[in-house]
Length: 508
Image (tube, rainbow, N blue to C red):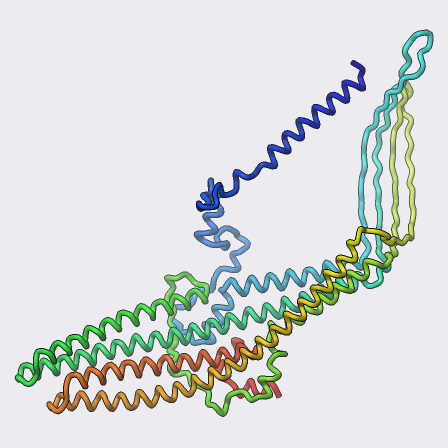
């Protein structure tokens, strides 16, 4: 077998072995779920994964030490602005949005770098050996062996001088996307402020209901004592005693239920604050926070101009502008590109031929090139990119229009909800006033023997429901005020949701 045949055989065997190895590496179905009807069971979970799940990212990285949560002080009573401040410092949602905004800003730097030249340095070294057979001389085989070795350093520069606006379009698109990311960062902060505000008033209402339930227990016990006193005097029946006991049991059940709802609302607040669930935070009472009056509500002019203040609308506009820049970028692919290139090439090599060795050569080569490139045919790829970019513009415009319509609807609904909530609170105030009088009169009448225990029970239940309704109406009005400020794009940590005078003045 000749040398060429042996080399061909070795090459074939190596190709077969490589194909077999690639086929074995490509089969990764064993890592996928084995059946569509059964849950996937992991073979093993890395220890650092368990550490992240248990203690969070801060525990697994020393670099995250500066991002540890701010622990609320046990000596401070936190009102709404203070709770918002803690949430903005601790809640991961703000850090996620901040990181995304910084990533978008980095993309601007990447786009701007395309205007600058690219300087590269390369070093190429190698060894080349050649054996050549010459014609036989006197029936003797003659071979000449030669070898070359050396190192060639290369310094090159590439600079795109003119591209008919391609880099400008890419840079403008990156800037628009960065602005949109900044608006979304503001939107995330506003959403967090709204969530904390809503949860604060929900917790306040739950705490008031729990306190009302405790008072209802005391009132029902007082009624029960009055019934027992009348029973000892022979003025009350067994049925009345049972009804009084039933009233006490109902009040205690309501107390347990409301206490559980209060604890749940408290945990919801801790979750927004980004602190451990066993943290003790003293939260200020929300019942004393004044409500806005109908005369202080935003006027029609503010509602019409509010779209320019909504960060989600502005982010959608930024996305539209970036999509339009994408069309310009795709169109620029049809135009030529003018570039400048330069290089400096130096090297040293040694040549040996048979017994002759030590032949060396060194030198430096320099050059500057100015050229232009124009793609002539690419199978329709550039045209498809243009169509894709135009389609993205249409989608971005439709998305903006849909968002504008939804935003206006949200503003109108929020304004109507706030107006209804204020009216509901006024009605609840009147209901509490009347039920307090009814309950006091019914209890006095029963004590004097002029009423029935049924009247007292109904009055007590009515008073409990009226007070709970007033607490819910107050919280609902505050939440509606925050929702309106949120829908107007003017909710922040420095401004109370009910400060409508500031909103109206800011819009003038």
